[in-house]
Image 1 (tube, rainbow, N blue to C red):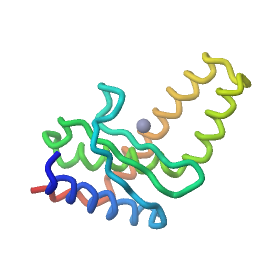
Image 2: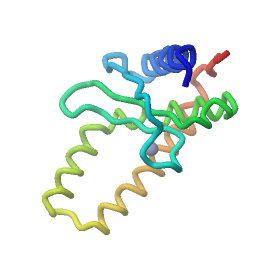
Image 3: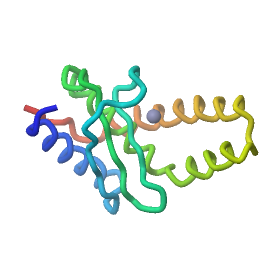
Length: 130
Ligand SMILES: [Zn+2]
C-alpha cells in the first residue's frame, strides 16, 4: 500500500467511523495484510482502549467502491462488539466454552456483522480513492 493509499484509507475509515457512532475510537493502519489470507481486511481492537488497528489485503484497491465501502463498514461494525468478543475469548481461553461452541459463535457472529454491514454500508458515502 502506497503512502497515498494509506492516507486515503485512514481518512475514509475516520469519515465512516464518525458516521457510525465510533467518533471516540483511535484508528490505526497496520502495514501487513490480514493474518487470514482469505480475508479482505481485519480489525484488531486494543483491549481496554478505544484503539483499533485495521489491515487490508493487497486486492482491496481493485474492488469496486461499493465493495470497499462494505468492507470498511464490516470492520467498523466489529468495534461496537469489541468488549463482548474479548469477554467471549476470555471464556474460551479459560476452557469455559468448548472449541465447538467457540467456532459456532464466531461463524454466526461474522454472519451477523456482515448482515449489519450490508445494510448500514448503503447509507455511508462511497470512498473517493484516486
Ligand atoms: Zn468480520
